[in-house]
Length: 311
Image 1 (tube, rainbow, N blue to C red):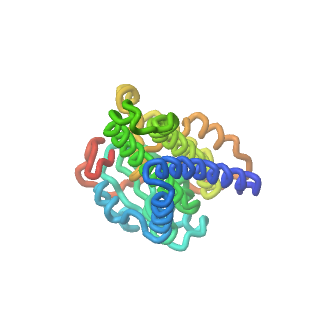
Image 2 (image 1 turned 90 degrees about the vertical axis):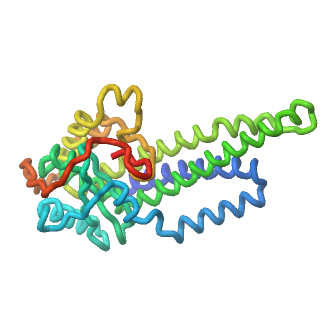
Image 3 (image 1 turned 135 degrees about the vertical axis):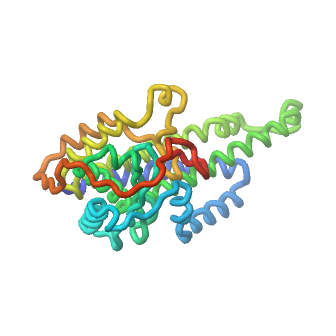
């Protein structure tokens, strides 16, 4: 059930093109505001920072979610499943498993393949059986193995830089509006359009990149677990239980609580269809049995927590 070289090449090409498109927009907007010389310095500095820095400290994000580490004694099933998936994925270290005391069913990964953590909420553990949990954990391990967290971090940094430059440029235009109206200053007509629409275009490209990585993580997770139906069943459960009608109307996107991104997942129906279309022998090693949940304290209802995270 491995991805074909053609599939891997097309997925990589699509990700590169989306990132390249975001980089081009970022270059135009920053150079329009700061000039080409300063734009070059900003781009080089940003790339060096992304390549050399470890990113947001893992502990900072875990504290924001109120997460605590689960030991093999507390939750042997989950820790054993995660260790086996990490072995199959060839990760240099087994991710640490963390428990988030929230009613919202959710799972996410943070860090790099060398040092990462997978977080699962109380709501998710109470919703999933053993087979479905294996599918969810396989999906998150695939994100780590594919280095999606770094790729999406780069896209997020580009998007934020463009948004900041856009707002700064609009303020400059407003301050100089009297000079422009009197003809004392000239601004090409494409500059205001670029300032207004560039953040929206960047957001759309970021969402497209996120969807590409989610589909790839689904495929990778199905390959690791050998059981695409387990992940498909988990996705259907999450779709039925995550969010209410009024949230979809008034708070779109707020029930997607990834630590550093405002990203929209692909439609669940399409993800399930792709998973069920996968061919190959299955190795369902995790039965559809209830999980033995770890000891828990007070469980918080879904809410906005510190650092603006939705948990």
